[in-house]
Length: 85
Image (cartoon, rainbow, N blue to C red):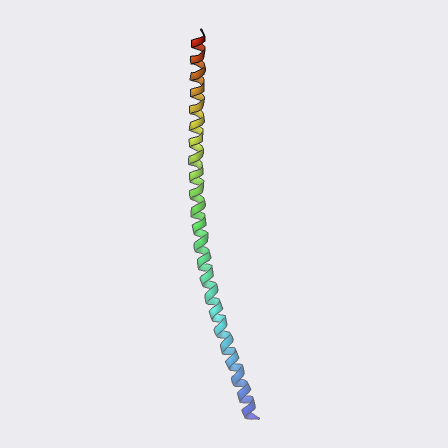
């Protein structure tokens, strides 16, 4: 009977050891995923900031082109009026 109890205790200890090892490995994997997630989040923030900066630059260029177009149209209209007189 003592041997049976000892073998049961040994099996329980083995199972607990395996569970503790599995939990430790899982915790390590979770920490690695958290670090990778933080890295990806930082990359996303940097990309978003760069994207916003580029968007502003493009919109500024469009504004300049629109102003240039207005000037060209006004000059064209003035020249047409001069020729018609």
